[in-house]
Length: 340
Ligand code: 5MM
Image (cartoon, rainbow, N blue to C red; front, side, top):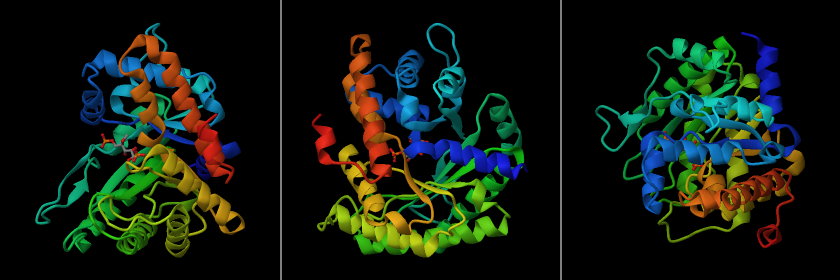
């Protein structure tokens, strides 16, 4: 393992207030988002949309790395230029989602375990040769009646740690993504408790599998009330609950925490990230950044709507969200940025 190379990659991903763009939707997820807008569910439509994203002028000023999917890392612009080359030329480091999805966990109704460890060492080598410098694996944990179970947390944490160790072995920085889902009526306190237990278990497993914390990135959920909870706390309360939970459970050796957005409205995700950086400025041992998918992409996807004529306006929408989130990383985001 080249430890310095891993540390350098993390540094380059988050330099100058940059963050990550998650564009690793699997085909079913991408099709679901297209279907909601009446965009054709074809390989060409997915390729055209991704070309729009990777060719957005100036994106590399705000985005340090883009997470791709197996189909995407092999795709090219209409003129034949590979997306990987377009990203590298724009100063954006390509990454790759390597899990093969979450499936029902046996004997645990309502819970899932993420799969993809079989053959992973060889797949990682292939992605490295293709230009990827970091990888991502996402585990999903639901809160509900009697959920999550210990077995579900343990199985997902173990898989995340095995994946992370394999990544570091080949020289890819692992993004470790344990996500507590927002779906449900649960309170912010319940989310905090579950996130705390999940993070402690993940770090116990990372330690057991000898993962070098300095050469990884944590991609967690923010601590939030469930989507249908009747009490929705303020931006400041969410920021405090999130950072306090992470200060207790995440070792200071981890260089960066890059939050997922989980379906939050784009502007709210920026405001919450901003509040964390503003309120805890001097007390954060890690970079507190973003690795959003929907909270960066959704306004652009809606603006594009599958029409060539809308590419430029969609790119402006994408760039705007990337810029807002860079400002939030610095604690300099304001609502006024949205009306400019
Ligand atoms: C892009 O969505 C990723 C999951 O895709 P699949 O479910 O199709 O595999 C997801 O891992 C994403 O990277 C993170 O959840 C962050 O996305 P959000 O939208 O939560 O910011």
